[in-house]
Length: 264
Picture 1 (tube, rainbow, N blue to C red):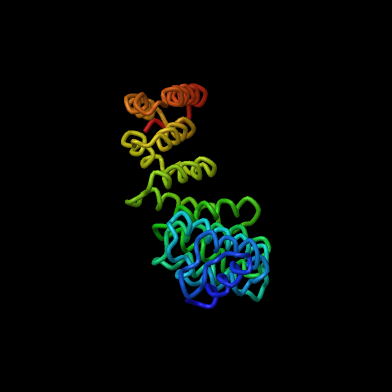
Picture 2 (tube, rainbow, N blue to C red):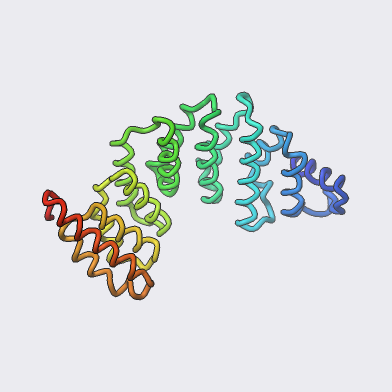
């Protein structure tokens, strides 16, 4: 058992818990109690916790994610320039042996740390590189988009190219498609229209269908009226008839109002 785990056991014993280090691993409750007590002041211990996956042994996946997220929250509150927090988050994000959800948390906390960080270039480089590499590409794009609201991290053309690259790759989760639809809508990235048409007519996901219909309504062309009509049986099954009708009405109105919309 490492030093951090022993320290955690000692802290929980002081809190009248009966677990002894030599008898068992600390429980999830013990570890969360540590974060809310001693961990609130000990940057070095928190860095050790995040850097060693063994500190999440015997946890369920949801417990590990919750524990890691809380440790990252605490580290950000205790930020010190010399603590190496940026490099630690980068290491977690780039470690493909760790849980994908934990790695996504690392990307999110990089974004949240950006304002106060004295190593902004390292965070920007990690997010940009990750946005070009599955399976965390969409998660990184989301964080880059958040940063772009207050900082200029990535130029518009490069961001659009990365969104298109992600939209075209295999193995996308439905959650990734929903995120890409939201990003493309906000950034008006119409280059993903061909993929959106495929998602719209083949998806069994309610979120993907709603997002696809809305995107086609806002950026589609004459041919997409047929695409929306083709979606009706699935829309009936998924209970999104109202959203599909709204999308059809909106696209029809756009086509009527703007004669310069291309007929593909």
